[in-house]
Image (cartoon, rainbow, N blue to C red; front, side, top):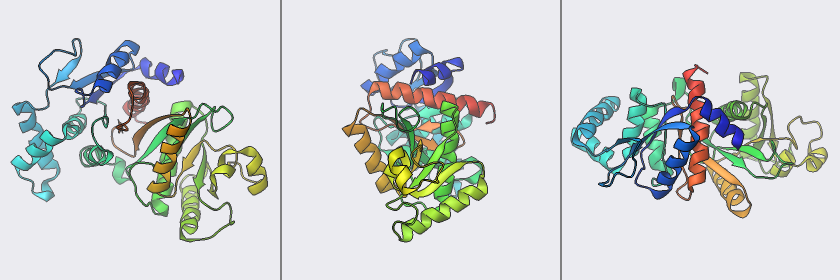
Length: 324
């Protein structure tokens, strides 16, 4: 993924890493600095100076807790949270502090999740960064399968694998549109989007199939230029020989590089199997539809994944700064 690293280095974004105590994050941050793909702001609560030359913040300092507890209390005013309760939240999950700092304009983006569960990162992102123009916050994975004949030189976007448990047809359409836009941004290629199912073009029936068909129609109405098709089984979506048999008239079948899953179960199970049973690299979850770029990290990630996710988020931040 050298092209992503090169793009990110053209205008490195300021990114907050609230998990500086994690060894994998520490290792990644020195690589990130050497590659010049981001300007890190690191949260670290330790006595030794392990981050010499970095911008470092202790999120447990009283002045930091007081300031951002007050900001979060204002943000969540309808919930009538006490100052003590908001301070307790920030102490237990510093991702909230990081997200509030991004919201305040002190950084362009945040990356967390090496030491926090997805639900905790997602809650901070949704509550503090918020959705873009009242839209849907979802997520995707950038998958590099290393199998050149599939997707775009082996690369795919899988969505949603991390946030929306059971999306309705409107939500599926928005996930598809946002995923396609990200694919185009990252690779400068037109996305071929397949909405996946256990059915290919009427080979089976059911409520889920009906939902997918509705999502396809909604997507086409919202974005007629988007190359999208469904419902489609996974083999028909990515294998050209199978596509010729099951749906020969589709412009997506056999060529799909963006795969939209009907629910979180199927998406999350699939990405983890592809990641673990093959030589694939899974980056994310990368949040879609937020006001500011952000990514969760799998708690099983390694330092190389953190570096590559940083490149993706830095590119997304570059585009945000241009109003795109």
